[in-house]
Image 1 (cartoon, helix red, strand yellow):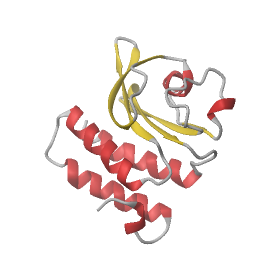
Image 2: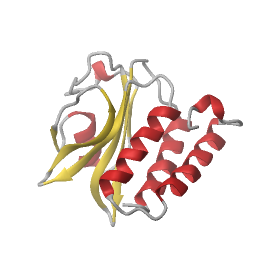
Image 3: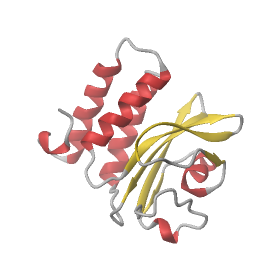
Image 4: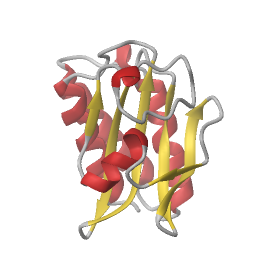
Length: 159
């Protein structure tokens, strides 16, 4: 149902459709873990050429592993460390074309070569991040960044 090849139109319109489907899927449910679990599953089905997608949540001043799809992952990440921690510290999306060139990159999966991390912001505070890894270098385009930002904005209405 959610695989990208089942969507028509531009990548932008595909992400718009995906965000609308996420909104409908999460409508009426307010459990954070359930909604993050479904969101990671939806992205895992929709996105091609990725090897990990999931969430880290802020707890006691650090990121702690939340719902995800993929191989086992690092459980805790300090703010300012790696791509995820840097995205939290800067409160902005970070797209990394080659994770091996990113200072302080945390290699949870040696197969990962590129990454996008989008902070989940509520009332100006980071409550977590969406983290997506790919085995393909330079996997994430500006269209992906815009589409995933829309996806996160839709998700935040249900958290």
